[in-house]
Image (tube, rainbow, N blue to C red):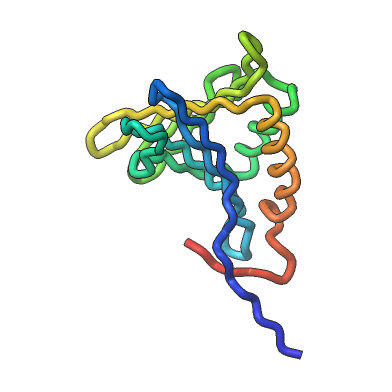
Length: 167
């Protein structure tokens, strides 16, 4: 019996929060399972709302970063209530060839319970810093937590029998 793996685009979980003040943002999360040659990760993107009259997002200004196993565990600690923020508010620091990225997640209690993700990227070429914030409602945080928890096996060990190499 011959079997073929059909490669389909990776699904992405997306949250969109546009507002009339044009200060909204979008959050995307996608799983890239582990392979024999690469660790699994979550690819996270935050995008600011653009300045148009119609609620749209400025995808050209998206800040995208990878969360590996330990980073994902830090996010889960906050979502599960084990910590109020990542590293007592200091967050995570990632360095790429193009930028330094600071990532923070914190639990907000007032005026309503929610979770704030803030990402700041400082480009090495011009030292310009851009920050994008996104606030998850408690319900959105529960759903994202369950999605992340369900993906941990693939993130750590890959998908049994399916190994596709991606950049």
